[in-house]
Structure formats: C-alpha cells, structure tokens
Length: 83
Image (tube, rainbow, N blue to C red; front, top):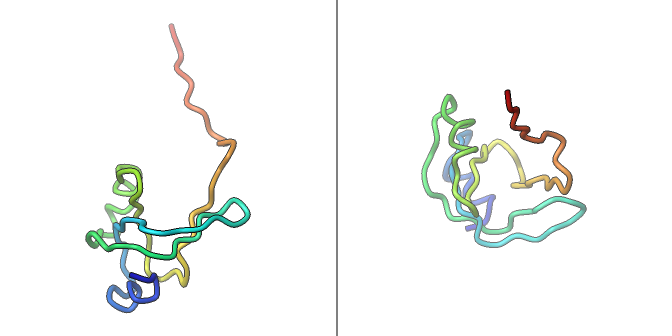
C-alpha cells in the first residue's frame, strides 16, 4: 500500500507498519510501499518505535512522506563502565 493511501485510511495517527519496498537517496530510506500492522497510542509511540522488529517502523501519518534518515556513524555510543 502506498504511504498516501495509508494516510487517508489512518489520518493523524501513529502506526506500526511493515516496510515492503523502499529506495535510498542521500542517506535517506524513502519508503514506497508499506503494510499497516496496527495503530499505536501517542503515549506508547516512543517505546513501540524502539521495540519494533527489523523491517517495521512506527511513523505518524501527519508526515506527507515516509522517510527514514540513515546514520552511518551513530553519534551516541553505548559504553559499558566497569567498577
């Protein structure tokens, strides 16, 4: 399903979607086709985003396009401290 179709069916909502087709441009994954899985409550969106399985993403339908910015060199690193 195209992102525009998803936006019409689920206006102004967070959705968990499966990414079916995308292309990359300038360190961005531009999503062309998705399969909606379920709506997500606004208060749960952040948690759901970080718990989403690979190939899935939580995204808000207020955005005209579904674009994921790719980071080749993450700014934040997890460091394990030993005492």
